[in-house]
Image: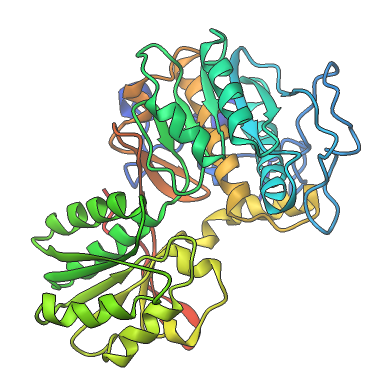
Length: 424
């Protein structure tokens, strides 16, 4: 990507919101508020990497702990005990990340921190004052920090938390005047004013089912792990299918103890000649269920197998062969990936992209509508936003919808079938 010195007019265009705010839409109908291809390199030199946003001098985090990352990945933040402040803009935004949490949770938090730093350097440094607090990966502490940020009267938006229990608690709180929350928790269903940012399994399953229904399939079966997560997946898939005149004939929760063998056996007596079977897996592996389906000849000429993005959290298994999956297009991160790696010395992943997008979205709103522009009308606009994770929009119930590529597993790899599922 060719990068040039910032031009204020180009930056304003890159940060433009939908037509209701500034009469400026992209060709796809989505806002360009997050379009990284329209962002110039802040270093002021073509091809130069973005410089990290300046930290506030008053923060007490170890500068060595949260300096640029090493080649092994994001730097350690084990010494995190206080706030970090990025940017000097008039719009105050709070961000809650598990910076000092142990293991993969802390690593994810530090990757998100670096994604936020790049977005601030690209777009937000003069628009936002981003205050980042360490949740330590503790759901109770994250909840307390989030409630404090919401009730502070100063934060115009809250980004995070990434702890699921804390996000679910916030979704139950009442109050119409609180700032919006852009939650980073995985598998979070959302709630009024508490928006789910990450692609959830329900979104992936629904998009995949809809793409197959659009090609003529009419009768679907959904296999889901037993538990609380099954209901939102069932609801989203059923709603997506109804748009195309297709139906969800039955939802069969399966137990990890039998690997789904029983429900696959029961399926034949409950549903005659289904056109497609959708398999969600939650935190577990889908392999046992897929083995039981394969024994029944699924996938095959008569029955299509649809997987979800959660399958891809594990190495590609031979049993995935022939399945269709709707998931994020990793190439969407291209416009920021090179600059990110040059700046932080490791390859960005989807966690970096999510953090980049929500900070860039906040900067776009601040630019186009000012500090008080974080309204339901703006955040829930029907056109949505295009970011490094693709095209997405928030719904009134707090869930998010994403238009994403549709793939088929062939020879152990994802082969693109369609560049985008049907969209909104």
